[in-house]
Length: 166
Image 1 (cartoon, rainbow, N blue to C red):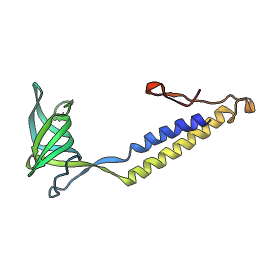
Image 2 (image 1 turned 90 degrees about the vertical axis):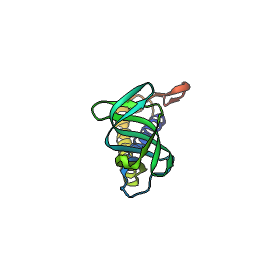
Image 3 (image 1 turned 45 degrees about the vertical axis):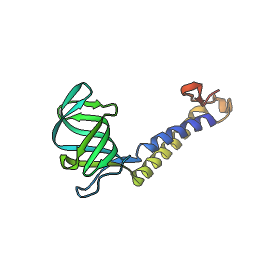
Image 4 (image 1 turned 180 degrees about the vertical axis):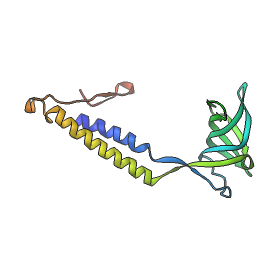
């Protein structure tokens, strides 16, 4: 049963991380985010962006990290470009220089304590519920107790590491 508890704790930790961060809009008068900040920006009008040997037309949004600030222009180490009429394009870290005047919306990814607390609470409740259900299904915590068998879940990880089981 200890292996099961360790596995459900791992799941709980993963679930709790889901609510920790979100993109928060910045006011038009707010200073530009510092270098290293994760951002998402929307252009005031669709742009044509050079991406390697191709041009992506009607780009409406860039998602990435601020590389540096030069006056009112951000150098964005991009992860994604989103076309107004099509899919998201992976950019493999292309750097784009974007003046603040060309953006209609600028969002910065920030830690959100309230959402994190809710996510942790939900993860704890789910973990306890799973643990209680496993006790009922397994017939107890010891093999053979109440005629049941030991209940184990094994999670294989890279490099031969295993959580749970033998």
